[in-house]
Image (cartoon, rainbow, N blue to C red; front, side, top):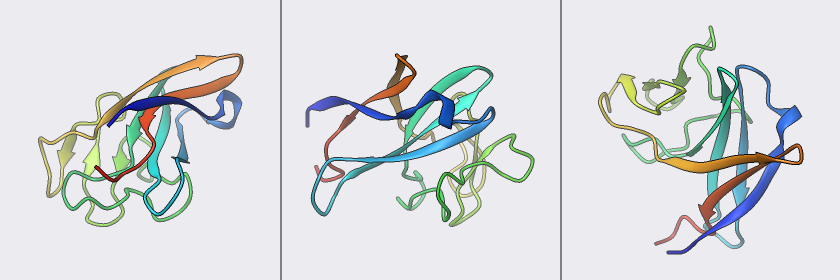
Length: 119
């Protein structure tokens, strides 16, 4: 499956710490991901928990736990380090979120991701 670079949002729309959800591609299986701003860095992940394959969030852009120190899977409570995507507690401890290539340019956020979840 080939990957393309997508403009997924504006840098100014991501708080510190914070996250921005995105979806790219067409059809029934668009690729879903999110970008995190953490310690001044932009980091992108596929929005798919390694435990059961569910999206991490229930509400738009809602990826952090209450004190905004860890990423939280709302389905089963797994928690992940924002800078590495490693699960540090929960049903998939030791697993990692799939990190995506991400860059900033002209005030925009660009992510290299496939067009589809299918494949």
